[in-house]
Length: 225
Image (tube, rainbow, N blue to C red; front, side, top):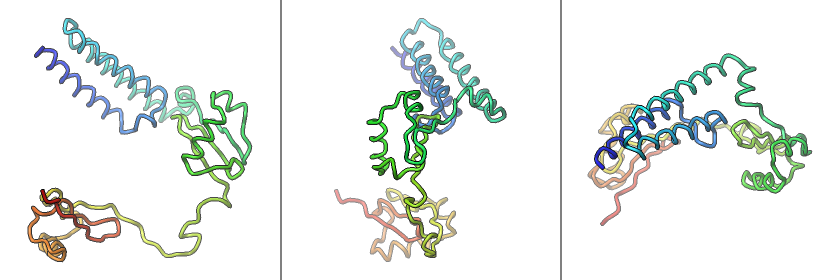
């Protein structure tokens, strides 16, 4: 039993390490070959865990082989467009200027009900309002409205605007995040003045304090037990 636990822990960290090297894309954003490799890695990892008689290397070596294969294929696709189309395929246009391409729908085995469901999820209702619907290689739909129906932006209305910045956490669960405080060029004295304005005297009483995307100070106390 102890050996099984150790082998499981080792394989867990190996698989996590391999998946990190493969990149940070979510499952729904994987290309077909990446999804195949991911599934194969999970299957290979279970073999040595289920049968302790099998050498650990029986799972490790194929997993590392899958990693190397994924890296090679990724590099090949960066340099050769033709091979990229062969491996990944190419996007399919399901709708153009409000008109469905029935041949593309049949080829991709997509029915109109499923397409309407995706439209509703994305906040669209009418095919006639859309310029394109494109089925991307990773299986996601790109839904592009016609230009006259696209959302109005501040730029369209000539409204002045500033770029939002990333929120920065300064205190989390009573602990000051010194590196984050330094990153926004603020001192501990400034932080103390900010929480003093919130009628708080101790950092330990704060659950979360941060500078939001508009550079406003936000603070929340810990809940009383």
